[in-house]
Length: 538
Image (cartoon, rainbow, N blue to C red; front, side, top):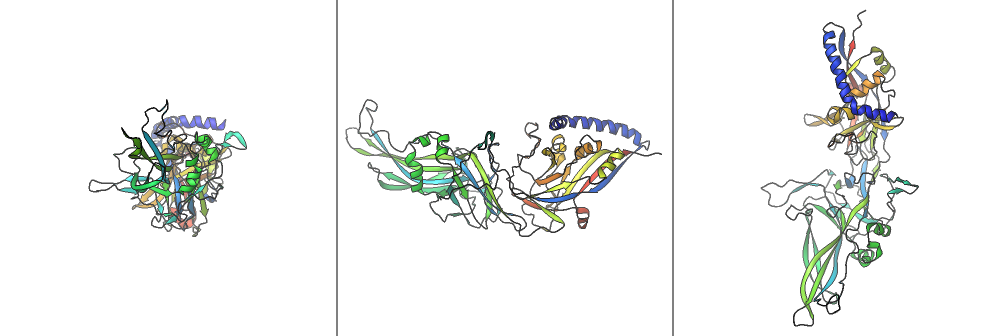
């Protein structure tokens, strides 16, 4: 009942608050001139408790797709190091892919009485294709495509090992313990499976925006299916638009013999009739890197053939019986591929290591993914009751958190989230709903082009506490903002997404915040309240 009334209140409170404050200002403008009301501002101390995050929800089952699937390592000594990987099912985009011709050209029957062409299929290469998240920065003066990889964290010049491993954990969308409930996977979930599919067991990569094409060798077959010649072919990724600039992507060559045995030779069987049957047969792949140095880079896993996929490149050599002849002669070659998109259940995995340089006593870390957050207590002791007794009207209430500039600030979060930790669960603060993201705040503020602080406007929330409209003075929680799951209101529709806070977080950035220690002076974490109250004329 409490949540229903709170949601209803959230949806209409903006108009009510504005109306009430307008009336108060109009009345106040008259009475202030009569010296009956005064305005004031107070700064109150806050209590901060750092909280370690063990894991976060890391599956896409309820939301379709995670915003970013990270791969690699981010090793910053001021924060937890992150080794990120992902696991995914594959989907069958072409049921029972064809690998042999239906019938020989020399065979004549009622179904193919005029058949003159034989086709011979040759598997050339199997790769894992992973498109980078990139921005086209090509200008008119650039002769070649030019891209910038987005959101790379760490040192992209260091080579990192990468393994593609058979996943043996069935990625069930329903809870095995209670099939009436949706399943979920945490970021530290242990997926079983050890068989490596790499062509090169020592494969390494560095994120490179210039990797916009991949050259592979195609094979020409004779009428017996034997390879008699080769030629080179270039693979580009242009999202289905041949006129667009090819996007950068990572290619991991896979062991053709293993993939032929597990896939190609079984294409005609029941395992490949549809994605459900296929996922019962082949449970997916794990893409892992166990690097100790390098970079983390996000990839696009949107569940279609232009996204991450396992690609089977094959060549069809066609022979024909020409007019007046009885033997086959070479007609042409056709280059083709079958795609198995990384689709359906796609989960991230974050392996965290402890902070090497712990923050000083006057500060604390906030880090995304399975990093750390902080519990914030405001209006402590008798402070709330004292404000209630004064019967004040809150004009503004702001929580400010300053950044510790002595720590690394190269990849700080662009936005932070502040929410309530209530007895009924984690909830959005009222101001996040009624005031919108600009007034509620939480975005990174800079001074002299350097990261400075984060501020939150919690006027409605503090007002409700003082008025008694909100009975529970819950702890607040500060953590790295995760887009879009932490949005209180849908920016496109203006409709409330959810009052409840979700535990997804794929934003790995970290920042060190000055705490409430008096040694931080004016930069300590604090709550500032501006208010109006009636004067005591007695």
